[in-house]
Length: 291
Image: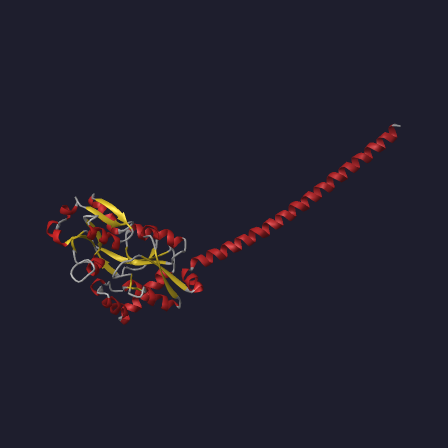
């Protein structure tokens, strides 16, 4: 009896070991299969990531592939504004058209909220900010910028019949200003410690002064020369105090290779005289910076 019981127990143990061995082999196969699939998926993901990264490195290729250069602007004479037929013209607009042509793409102008220009770039709703943009430290840290191409300043705009009272920086500190949101003009008014109201663009700031809802505005000197004083849309306004000196540049997405392409274009356009010709058409030739 003992011998039979021993044989039964031995057989049971053998079957148990075989079952355990089979389960182990199966688990190992499943694990091996999962690892292989994971490895393949990881490899594919890495390859896709590498391809995305490679594509992201060339903004120039991105623009040429889609066939359009989308330019973010505001209403800003003499840089970007519409003619009687609704076409965008101005020194910046004409230069943008010529640059797009040099890339073999069409140009498209899109009015933006100036305060959101970096978000517009990074979200790829626009490809470039080209609108008399001051090269501040903040702008240069957030965008890939071109070389400076125009000199500018921020100037105080007041009603012409009150200009004699506002000929110094101290004399304007008590005024209530209208300033473009996110602009260099806003920064200058903040530095003065003056009261201000933010508006959509510099053209609206002028309208606020003309209508009497603001005492003064701070806008770009190039715009002031084109839009206020005798023979302009705002003959009742004039500019008095200059608050700073600055330079204009063009902004792209951070790391964009379009900035270098534009610098090359600027050099060629300045060398052949076409840049100067465009500047003369809008009266900004004296502000040009040699390229």
